[in-house]
Length: 208
Length: 208
DNA sequence: GCGCACATTTGAACGACGTTCAATATAAAA
DNA sequence: TTTTATATTGAACGTCGTTCAAATGTGCGC
Image 1 (cartoon, helix red, strand yellow):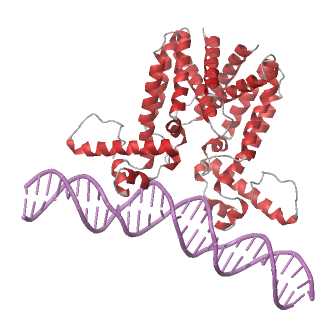
Image 2 (tube, each protein chain N blue to C red):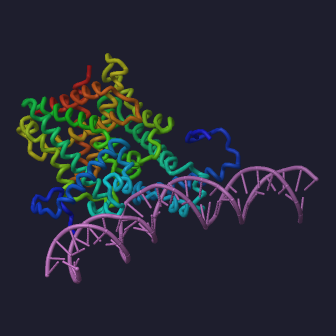
């Protein structure tokens, strides 16, 4: 039994229709619970009850809880990817584009707080992620390729991706610290302004 | 039984000498296990065995596992604070000082990877932290006050702390993403260069 | 309709976990 | 020594993810 990719478009035989429906119901139930109580509140028994199957039946839909969480992460990253895509297409000035992507990331995190948190807070028994999950993560950076190429046309691609990752990571850090409710809250608008400023400052310095 | 502050310097009566020694042994055993296997591998039974007491005896030393982890976090933050302090005193040029603090943070994270990770990865039953832990977190920012004041003398203090937090968060994000071994590794030296660059770029832009 | 092979679903049971608490051992006081 | 307070113990409890033999359901040739 190998690692099943998220969506196998191969055979839609009626046999697995039921399974797909169960899987979808499971995902939605899990997302509801995460949104309501955080990723730590995901319990096998609760989920089985939510979708009306016996406890053991969960393991016919997903391999285990780690698998469940990785699928959820995949969904969330899919939505995040769409949000970044939308952010990247509102303008075509490179700096403004990078700012829009950064703000789209922050807005997504804020409006999907628990699901976004679940991306990092899930503690898997097996520490190394399946390739399809790593690929989805790395795929998020692709939205920066365009503006980065126009911003630093003389630099090597390696250097560009390094800078892109640094920018992305910095914005991620600002979101993480800023949305941590255990510390003093900073107004969302002020945080957005900070993100805009940092991206602008970094771009100004790096423009070759 | 109220929340006990980390170090009560009040009475060092011989009565609690034993307890202090047990506490110290417990902390060291816990840190060893975290360093070796990560914070997820902390088990009450293992720790009790490590320091030679019965399982139930743990709850005479710490209130519960959450308490244990918060104490560990306090220790780690103490060391981190010292590392930042040391970084801040190698020069007195504001930008270089901020860069040094940022690099000290990154170096600490790299050289104390698992303990540093435990600061964020611990999942507590009770989500809100005790005041002494929040205070320790916020205290880490104080090393930036000096250089920030010299860098932006005309801005309000509120604005300065906001920028300081943004910078800190950005560096934190770079460390988090950079030290995540599940993604493609970036050489530590390159990451350090990125941190230096970002701090420099931000300071250049913000200098009033 | 009947019987048979196969797939799916079930829920009791298992081991690991954090936590509790009556029983026991140890130390202090009288 | 006897009595009282304190510290330690480890069996037991509830919760968790996971397993698996048994029960139930499904499709098919006759």
